[in-house]
Length: 390
Image (cartoon, rainbow, N blue to C red; front, side):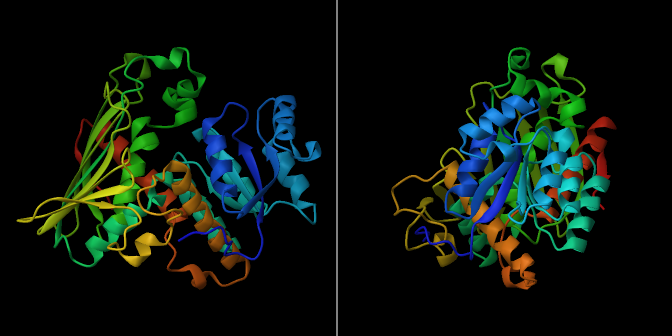
């Protein structure tokens, strides 16, 4: 159980690019990173408007001299300081992730980046090569994977409770963009503009979350081929999709489906992950993240609750409060940030093997998410055909 004791030697001096005033995701990043004292916010390039960014940083309590007009100025100035930042979070629109992350890595900074990591697999692999060469950590914020019951589902698969895995059913389908809300909502507008969002909307923005969770729960499954169809039900969003369906075949014979949508009218969030084996199934729903539904053939269905002694010990590691008290998104993100910090310290001390057992969405997860979206787009744009995953 987490009790506030930091497991690293000292807080990591940390900066942000983006995430300024009015940014919901910026607040989530700051709350998660500083929740357990693993990160100490020292600098930022929070806004395209330098004055507005400086004012926001000052409101956060930062030294105004360390609130920079852009990321290039921040990386240069902080690199020259003996107390400069060691890690930076990239919380900006998709089209900027690659150049900012690349510049940060070349400045010998660890990076925590919003997804998608890049627009193309080639770009993602470039970042992976730089990070590997320089011994740097890149974390990707698949934040929902920090919920404790994801770990329990993974343990049930690993210990054979479900039998041989046959079917993976994934969904992230909300209804908040069932109309053209982007006309009055700048935060939604860039997500449906290919210049900023890249080659997809809901495939990259939503679907990669349950995709990564499924990879955590079933790490041995490897996609063999997939077929994708995508639609723009709000016509002005074309060529980007606001609804898509993906069929997947895995090596070994298992199959998967994924439905992702921003036009699932009436749905609050609609992210669900169900894994079905030859003996039973588990299902996790992010609107009830403290529970995991376990169904064994021939037995009554049961609901497993976070924090209970009947769970696997590893599933209890990230609990912050006793069973019955709800934990949510901020706790899940904080769990991941604590792991990012442990990984950063181990890499800086030249001993990455020390955290080889640590599960967190790193550069490999970022590369895989980009590669999956590329294959989905290629399949859909060819008329919904099967494509080898390769």
